[in-house]
Amino acid sequence: MASLESLLKHAYRKVDERDGGVCLHPGCGSSYNTDHHHCEPRSQARDRVACVENIVTLCEGPHESTYWREYWQQWQRRMYPYYMSKREQSEMERLRLKRFTDPKVRERLEELEEKWGIWEERRIKV
Image 1 (spheres, rainbow, N blue to C red):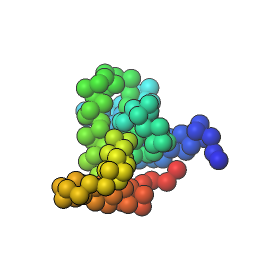
Image 2 (image 1 turned 45 degrees about the horizontal axis):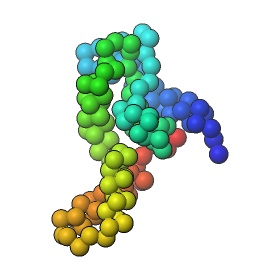
Image 3 (image 1 turned 120 degrees about the horizontal axis):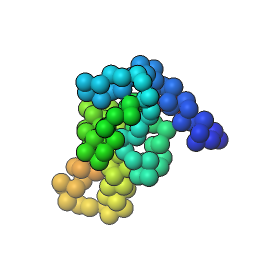
């Protein structure tokens, strides 16, 4: 099994190819002092730390606050609508365990399972 460090290096190379090595913050485009940042925090996205869909290139500007994290999560949802967050995955597991008979809950579970299938199929492999 590959180490997390080697997986991250590979993911960062793919992110650099996607982003062109420049800050994606609107109106910035700087290539000076850029770094990779996670849209979904690493502490929450333990199994998604090395997912290209969860990483964005930013410079050392004022783009790292909680306010901007929400912006980048919205960007992530637009760019990769199939990205399955840890929160959604947990919700799907919870609904599977309870085996609800409520049609609305079953519909939500089917929606999440469909998204999970697309996520498994389309995510950028590292």
